[in-house]
Picture 1 (cartoon, one colour):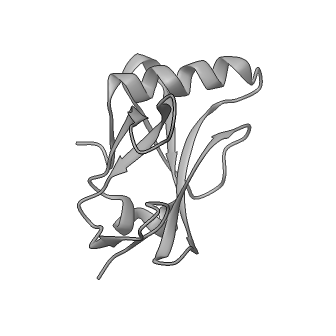
Picture 2: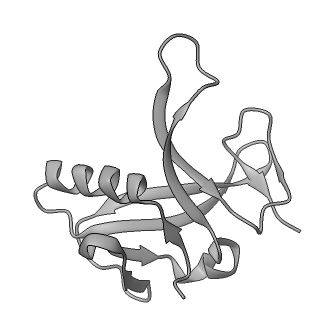
Picture 3: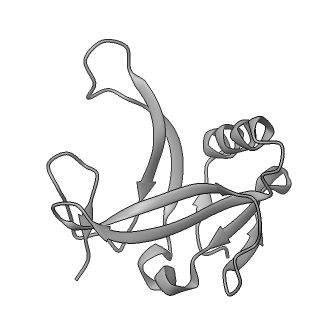
Length: 115
């Protein structure tokens, strides 16, 4: 079992972003302390391996790197790519994080808390 799970839509979106960045080697997920609730996800396309990151290969050979410092916060997370219906006008697509370790989210949905 992987530390995180990506939907096919998320893999496709990330792979498209990797293709746009010719020197990107994979997708990295970290967390930072921020926002009104405490923590926020930091997804990124990386260009070099960060020492001590956890690594696994997802569908279609996509390289995934997880910031080891936040492994306990991230474990069990599902990443999806969906249309955000809470926007005015045309729905905006974005990565969403479904994390069983979250206890609450702020009103804007950008940050979360754990116990």
